[in-house]
Length: 403
Ligand SMILES: Cc1ncc(COP(=O)(O)O)c(C=O)c1O
Image 1 (cartoon, protein in one colour):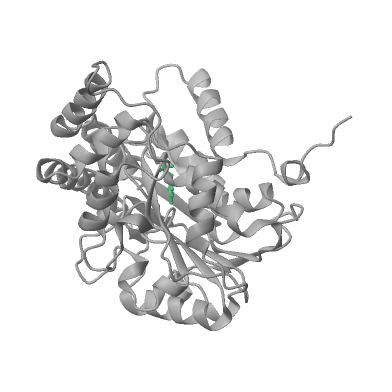
Image 2: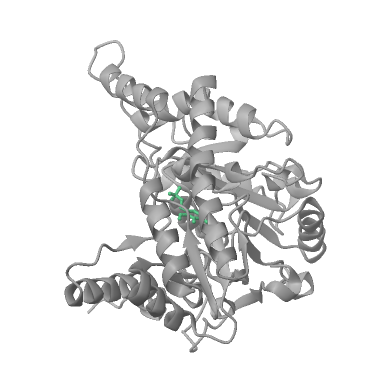
């Protein structure tokens, strides 16, 4: 019989979110009257905004007309959208339109990017981190078996209060990959210009590539903080950036993102990564939905950009309420000011114990930090994605019942 892909066999069963859902179900069954509120998920909650909604509707309607119909488009995305993305998001970074590849989302591109480097790639991740970097590496065989608190072959770079949530760059693998997320999921930490400059210098020194996940870049309010790795000189020779319309404008279900691959980025062989990414996009991807792309174009018109800013401000408003509640309780936390997540520290306690206490006493679902990697133990991730009334009620309960 056919053998199972070893990478799949090595992949540990999805634990974090299924386990949270199981505990929530169990609690709801035992407490039928409880109104449970979630501050745990990274899914958006607010409806699409008017201008963007109109762009999507108009895009769909256009397809129903003889003149407006289009079938397959360029796999790399609509030219107009590539131009808008380069102009709106990379004004400080000089990215060419054809270095922007439109996709069906950052997560999907993170999976496909692994095809560029294959099973030989040495992989490093921030610890804690968004699980897809590790799981995708395991799938392509770039990591080995589960070893209790991590996978063989993955280098986990702890990010904690002691190092300002920025990894020790002396630990970067040579000729390998480092996944770096800023603003960070789960910690909400945002790398400074000095930190990203050091990251680029270290990656270039050891011949490694940075896969920079900027899915939350538009939450950055502080103008001194870089929104793209390509704002850093030298990054064009050592970095790829993935990004998304999901969180800033609610396209989590619509599905639209992009990846930037600069033409200067080369393999040891001297060939360009850009040419291979173009090949991958035309081989195992067939372009993002044209309707989603029309919505993306609307989002990047002035009215759409204004709506995007308002959506982000709304979620950051939620984050401010959660931060105040945690402060009232004397719980120290980071994030939530230039990111939608808050990373709260409960020293000396297991994340799952704190999760259970908050669920029992407040009927609020959170995310245990230990689910994002060994360095997340003792932390809880609070998410600001939620309706305002729910967030207010959850904060009230936290303050009243955990005091
Ligand atoms: C860091 C990070 N990158 C990427 C994604 C996924 O983005 P998309 O919806 O574009 O696939 C998420 C979603 O939670 C995320 O947290």
